[in-house]
Length: 187
Image 1 (cartoon, rainbow, N blue to C red):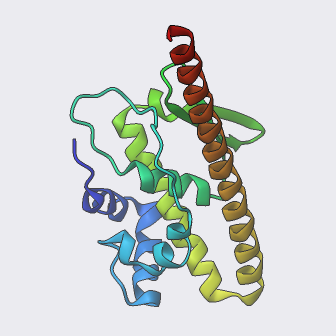
Image 2: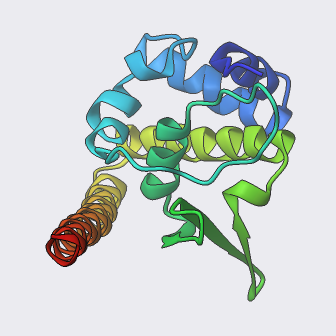
C-alpha cells in the first residue's frame, strides 16, 4: 500500500469533526491541503523536525509504503502525544506513542498498529495541526502560548535525535574496535 495523502484528506473532508477545520484553514491560508508539504503548517513548523535516517520498526505488511518521516514529524510536533524511541533486538528503533484521555494513558508501538490505525493517526495529527494553525491566526495570546509549546517540542525532538546519533556513533566506534581486536588476535 502506497502512501496517498489525498486519500487521508478525502477521509478528513468526509469526517464532520475535521471538515470545518479544513475549510477554515483553506479560507484563512488561501492554500489547499491537498499537498500537505506545501502548506504553511508544514513549512513553518513540521518541516523543522529533521528526522535522522534510522531503521524504524514498522508493521510487517507486504507492500506497505507510508511516509514514516512525516508520521514521526507529526508525532513529535503534537501537543497531545508523548513518545520515545527504543532500540529493539533487531537493531530497529521502535517508536512508541502514548496518549491520555480522562486519566487513562495508552501506549502503543507503531510497529504493532494496523495500517488503518496508522492512517487514523495521520488524520488525528494533521487535524491537530490545522486547529493549532487556526488558533495562531485568531488570537495573539494563543499564538504566544502555542509557539512556546512548539519550540519546546522541537527542542525535545532535537535532543532525542542527538541521543540516537550519539548512540549510533558509539556503537560504530565499538564495532570498529572489536573488529580491530579480532584482526589483531588473528595475526
